[in-house]
Amino acid sequence: MSTTHTQFVHVARPARGVDGTAPNTTILLLHGTGGDENDLLPLGEQLLPGAALLSPRGQVQERGMPRFFRRHAEGVLDLEDLAFRTTELAAWVPTALEAHALPTQRVIAAGFSNGANIAASQLLRGIPGLHGAVLLSPMLPFEPDTLPNLSGVRVFIGAGKHDPLVPVAQVERLAALLRESGADVTLYLTNGGHSITPDEFRAAQQWIATW
Image 1 (spheres, rainbow, N blue to C red):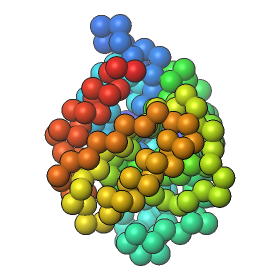
Image 2 (image 1 turned 60 degrees about the vertical axis):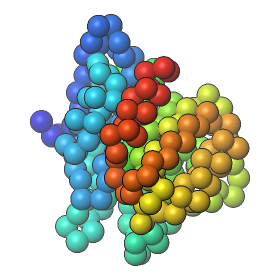
Image 3 (image 1 turned 90 degrees about the vertical axis):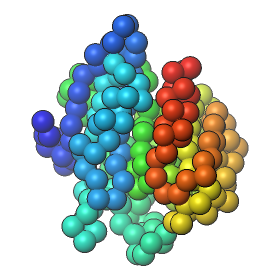
Image 4 (image 1 turned 45 degrees about the vertical axis):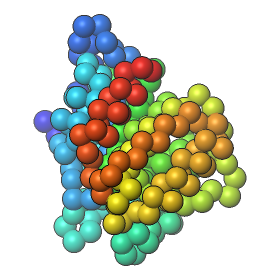
């Protein structure tokens, strides 16, 4: 059931620890434009079976569609709002984890498109709280003035070479910046577009399973 807690409508599910796996992991699910707190629950359940799930709904509305931050146009982000919303979300997550008694030992963001972008924003700002991220169809939200210290953070980036919204060079730049910041980055490119392909998702599953 969806609940309201510290401003974010969200779904929280405790870790099930299937076959003793993932009892110490919470997947933070971050939907794309037009999604909601229920949108990525099936993805989270399959990505790492047994992990706890925390799935908030973005608080910005764009023509009636939930988003995590504003934009001026397709591909043109409201950078001021992005900074504010990134900090707001990052501050909310620990309170939600505590409120629902979800694991804090390993918090991994899994986001698609708009959700991936706000997770990337948190990483590039060096805001603590994420031990890793699965960024699906992300863009480079901004170029940081100073690179953060992301040593010990693992990131999987999945993107389509034919994405009409995000040039592949921009995805590669995001991967390069995260690597330069010390993150362990896996970049998986498909022949798809702005979507999650089956092979991309399998690669993400294999990546997270080896952690």
